[in-house]
Amino acid sequence: MHKFRLGLAHLYTFLFLIYLLAPLAVMSGAAFNDSKLPSIVPWRGFTWRWFAELWADERMLVAFGNTLVVAVAVAVLSVIVGTASAILINSISGRLRTVLYGMMISTILIPGVVIGISTLLMWTKLGGLIFGADDRMFPFIPGLHLSVLGQVSYIAAMVMLLVLARLQSFDGGLEEAALDLGASHAQVMRRILLPHLYPAIGAGAAVAFFQSIENFNVTQFTRGGKDTLTVYVFSKVRAGITPTINALAFLLICITLVLAVWYEIARRRRAKIEAAREAEARRAEAMAEITGAA
Amino acid sequence: MRRYGMGLTLTICLLVAFWLLMLVIVPNITLFEQSFRPYLPVTEIGGPKDVYSFDNFLKVFNGDTQVTLLGFTFNIPVHVLTFSLTIFYSILVTILCFCLAYPLAYYMAKIVNPKTLPTLLLLLFIPLWVSEVLRAFAWWIILALKGPLNSLFLFLGVIDKPVRWIVDYNGVIIGLVYTYVLFMLFPIYNAIQSLDTNQIEAAEDLGAPWWKIHLKIVMPHAKPGIASGSVMVFMLSAGSLLVPSILGSTTSQWFTQTIDQWFKDALDWNTASAYALLLLILCTVFVSLAMWVFKVKLSDIAK
Image (cartoon, rainbow over all chains, first blue to last red):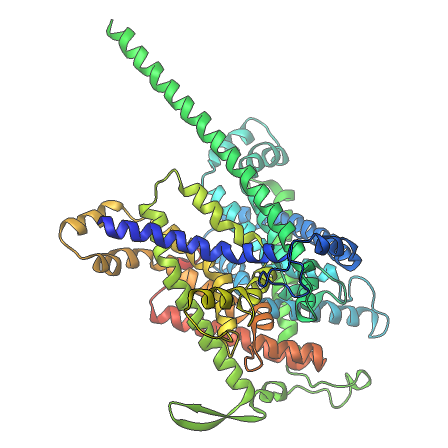
């Protein structure tokens, strides 16, 4: 490739990274500015004040707790449903597969507003049908449990895609062999199929967890007065902002960064070990050749 | 299914049925049914006035507003205008995302040193883990009248007085592009990755200019990735409620905001349902049309 264009490509990537990361830096920086409005200019001196205020904000802490509970619930449900769907899709074929698969995928594309309203409508109406309009009770009232169900309806599809990709590399012969050797169906599932799927299931759980934390649209319509972090931050941003939100953002970004660095170090170590192993194998091969020749 | 036995097969089928029926199909049927009912006080529900009609949908055509386009002035219902603008700007966001993401996707797939790629990917993933509301909020800070962007430009002498960035739909577009550009990047990157580098080199050896290589070789190969990225970005933008609410100006209105207003302010769930259904149906029709025009199949997208 032409040298000039190569340089241009590097430059573009660099600029793109700045474009992606600079807003996060600006937002973090504003968390330390001693100014009532969240901004980095004009700089009015360094302060920890906003972190103290953040800690004192009890509604925020409650919202944070709610978010974690919802995210864990969504992750667990999505993994169970998504894995089951992937196994089902993988073992059927033909028209039924196309239809089911299409339906599952399309859930990702349904606007969150639609999911939110339709979930809320169905459960409240169902409650109305069973108990009459007056004394509705759990789970037929708006609340975070409906947010969980609404979020699962599309996050399960993401888990399904991840697990399905992993299933492609699974050798069905292993299952047959285990069955022939007298293993029960449950054993085959627990000892052979699921262990193969664990990496995808883990990735799916992580994706589901983070997608759930991010979710706004579905939660906004189904939450019934309860807060999650995203909804709470949103209400804060709209009604008089203080830099406490920036303090929160800074903490979240730090957590992300720590996780990212930790992951990167682990990856490099793995790569190093692999490279060492390969080198050793090559050396052994060379040795074998030499001794063989001698 | 012999492979999993009765019990397990049944469990699996039940789980899938629970997902598709209870979480997807029945709620949408309820939405459909509800959208045809009038908004009534609780006591009159089920009474003689509770009959099906298209009234909720026809509310879209209430209340005209004047629009000037290309020198012509005509009247158009407010909500129809909002919807058209939502679609128009979502398309614009999709195109902008493609223009930003394509060069980087190509760089990641074909140019970058394979050793630095994982690090690059990690850096790209960081904003994806920071929630959408915070990303929109970050741009709200940056674009503020007394914000860092104006200070920077004033300092560099690019402008001589602060510019109001969040006017009309500008803020919304900037925010949406920033939020969703990565959803365009990764599918295209995946698609280009599977292209045989020899094809590009052969074209280069035969004297093809770089733009022709992209137009005739890389892009056709990456078409499924481009299509799935575009569909994702378009649907996410059109369905976004956060970004337009935070970065919107007084003159910008997104269709999801209209739905939200019916739901939260007017407490008219039925009309909100009708509008949500309209959003779903019209977006689906639009995406299908676009796919038909560009000759992409759904099976290409869901890869």
